[in-house]
Length: 178
Image (cartoon, rainbow, N blue to C red; front, top):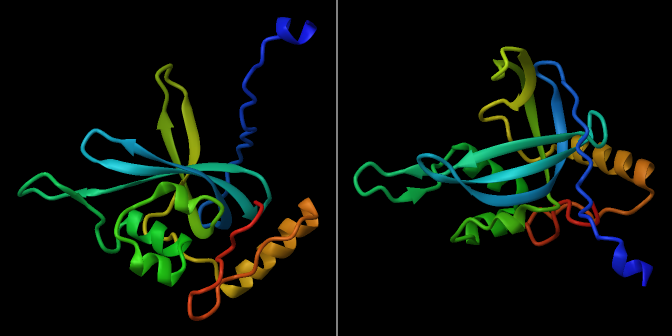
């Protein structure tokens, strides 16, 4: 009876923010991914949770499709942010066999990138500083970054994370309980 009187409320994810200095290299897990619609083209928005340099901080990144001038169709530009995001998150086999962009497939994967500090003015006139991912810096974590992030994660959370993909691309790539 009491249970019916207590409304169930959504439990939002805790988003801890931190301003990292320019040029900081970060390894993060993709905690969420969804398709978005921008003013000129659709894209993918990813929620990232840092593992290295520090554990548990949230960053959000948007990667956009490019648009053909001739017919207005959308595509993934080779070397663009969306292309680099997929290359970093997916195994080599998944990336080259992939015929469409699937945001859900990115969740739970590890990526590395550099951040920069950008400053902008809010509507009330105050200056705000935030971190942006440096354009073109999204990549797969190096072996050293990957191993260090696994050790850090297991030490903090006391839970195993799946092994890195094999050289032939058949294994998992940082997938597991993140």
